[in-house]
Image 1 (cartoon, helix red, strand yellow):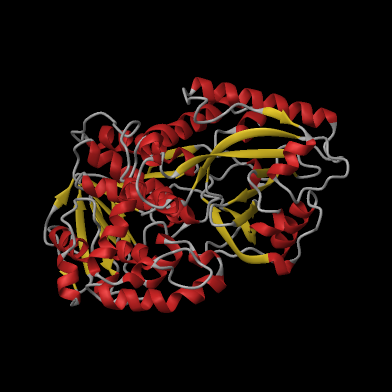
Image 2 (cartoon, rainbow, N blue to C red):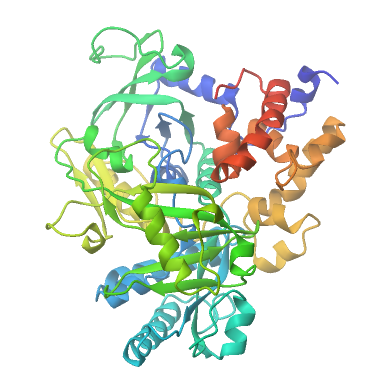
Length: 547
């Protein structure tokens, strides 16, 4: 079957993000269209703003210089947490906000992407009875916040003390000497942070938002932005000054003026490069990727208090694919990188912390991969970045550009709502009420319905109700190789790459391997899968995909 015939099978799905749709919608704006809201940034906050605005009846365009979730939003711990840390620091309001937003994701908007994760604090000799008592009290208080947030106990069970046998059954590689059992709490775990962003973007598109990746903002004003279409230029900006015509939409090569009635800057750690009056103090959070066998194939996460620190922990997070993530550092950075990397000191710190609770210590040979993300923290008092507030802020620059910064992945929805409320009031936009507290994302369904789907559990966890469609679209091509893993030792199939190309705005090999799937977290697995990814993209993409 020819590629043209295969492409013709593409369903007319209003949530599908295709190259054709992207080019058409960009051209409409570049040739004079005006939208109510222009959102800059395709991470979790920007896509959250786009969905909120589109679902309130506003016309919306979102531009992103790279790919969806190409920045901080893909480098998280993949947790949707209820604010236990903020309880310990006395910030009850932020802890409550986190618990509410966690419940929203787990019950209403993305139950297919978020599961309950048991977390153990092993009571080893280094944990004094006083610290254990304080931790137990914090877990009880956190469960109270769960109740206030109206998250059912059937979704998040209550905390309890486990004996030594139960503890080691959940994490077999734990040290047994001096172990007094553990404290068990529960939190939310994302199957994939980048998939949450893609789901937000596609849901916004289904409500009419224009999602335009590979479009870089050069200058912002309250009435729009001068941008460069990087797909049109091959990532070579048009020569000459960054400015452009003051009136009407004009397009010169890949450069255009996109006009809007309001602009929201949601570019995270890059926000201060596009808007005045924004002062950030980014910090780096680094993780290790380790084979689950090093922890005895754990069925629960581990919380490890950092010695000498009152409110700092290292966490060990088992993943559905058999890997384990170990994090999290909190180091101030002076330079913002597109792809930050952990330092050798951070790797050693995380290895030492994880080894402190294991029978067999971890070594560098156990590290299959590493990753790091930058937190867009608001500048505050001098001192460790771990002490800076995780609250978000909505700021308006003298030019009228609205910027939303700070916060964290769990509270993206509230951040988006606050930013949009500010824009609606400041620019007198005619918007309906916020609907995102109860608006299901693409693929979402109640847990009971998800459990009844006739599709592999791994696909249901990543695509929800669309899991069967991922397989059906591949079967329609008539090539059984698409239903098989793309390489030995990985679970990702060609069907998932095909779906990403046809529906999820995957315009490059990096999009496929590093964001629509997470093969890039283990370099060896990524290298093994790349030939198949290139072959599938060459066969099915309507335009050549670029790395």
